Image (cartoon, rainbow, N blue to C red; front, side, top):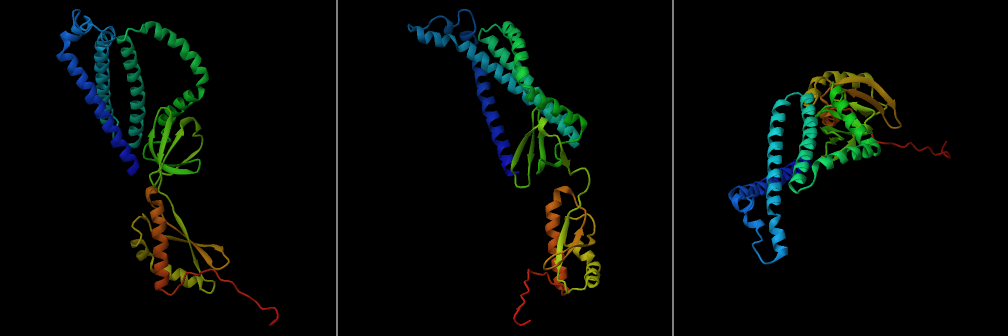
Amino acid sequence: MEKTQKKGNKSLVTGVVFLVVFAAIAVIGYVFYDKIFTEDAWVVSDPTPYPFLNAILALIPCIVNSGLIFFITIAVLFIICIVLDKVFRGTPRRLTIGKLVKSLVKVVVWVVCAIAVLAVWGINVAALVAGAGVLTLIVGLGMQSLIADVVAGVFLVCDGTLQVGDIVTIDGWRGTVQEIGIRNTTLVNYSGDIRVANNSTIKVFVNQSRKDSYPTVIVGVPYEENLQHVKEVFEANKGKIKEMCPALLSDIDFNGVDALASSSVDLHFGATCKESDFFAAQRQMRGAIKTVFEENGISVPFPQVVVHDAKEE
């Protein structure tokens, strides 16, 4: 999670820097409006005897206008994101829809910004848009996977099967859903590692956040130990074990013998907890059961090998 926070802080700083730069350009354009944008402006009247330098100065109005457009675009996106965060806050479902809407809005706003900048530089936008329609049809045929990702992302959000904050397992990789974008879904595991999966590839997954989880542990006892005595010790200390496991929501269940292993009789224990506490609950259960067993003279066995001498026999 620390990696994710650092990445978010870096993106925020970068955005602020760009906003300041484009704001400075906009201020310069306003202050020196008469010298830049009027018909007899200084920059377009060939102020120097050098044609190359005059050509560069003549580009200043386009540069300033482009900076102004970028400034307005970033400011509008900033305001829209704040509004969307206010509107879509609360439940995980609302957060998920909010993130998807923000992704779509960003794409639309930046496309409009690009068209406006091209118009400032004298490019025939109408012809470009008309040509883009044909190009989009051609490119769309070759971008079916991208379209599938977008459609799958919309259905994931609308169906509510996957939400921001859910703990899920996708293709054997367990993590918390950080974002469902228009193309990708981002997961973060307990160690802060990030995995990005295309929405269209998420065919089967396990959502472990909708109900309380039931972590289980296996604890071995020696073969010579009386199982009825072990059960009585466990039942007498169940409350104490629960106190030693703050991650648990219920008392621990003794589910009987799980296996007759080579060096131990393996006992099966389980309890309920929040999915976010799954691994912590397992660690606490193992430690608490071992501590209580040792306090009551029940040892945890270790691998043993019995050797017979054929000659003595």
